[in-house]
Length: 220
Image (cartoon, rainbow, N blue to C red; front, side, top):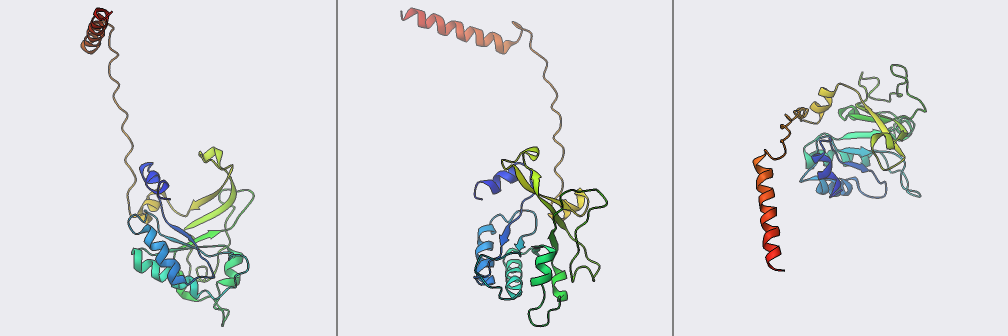
């Protein structure tokens, strides 16, 4: 990340931190470690908590772990984080562990939903919305619709990559990133092609080369 994060900025890409939440470690500890890494350069997009399958053998504590992480990250980085999850996983583990209900507090956070399809048809293919966002009239901010995108077509080294949609316009994406679209690079005005023997720079170069050859010849 130390090399890729600034390189992505130089390339004009929008960046953001992404943390795979572990279940065997305090949410506060994870948030502090994550925030320390991003503190000097958090990127333009909101930080993300990846809430999905835990490490093998670890037990689900409760979604209080997720809330701990989100609250602490916002406190440390000053940005409202985003929740990344899938409908199937959230429907099982997004509920209050005691009441088995979906608490309204989660709609405070933007939603990045992972719902995969083999094919995408514009205007037809849509992700399944989840509670409590659905009943409150909220929708997704990002949608990861496949994990099998053509990486080579997008200039990636990997053959398969995740592909995502943003739910809005390009201007709205840059507004989410608290920045503005970069101005188009102006097309440079081509310089006139120099005529051989007429360009003073070429003439000077020839003179210097000839003088150097003459000086070298005297040493023989």
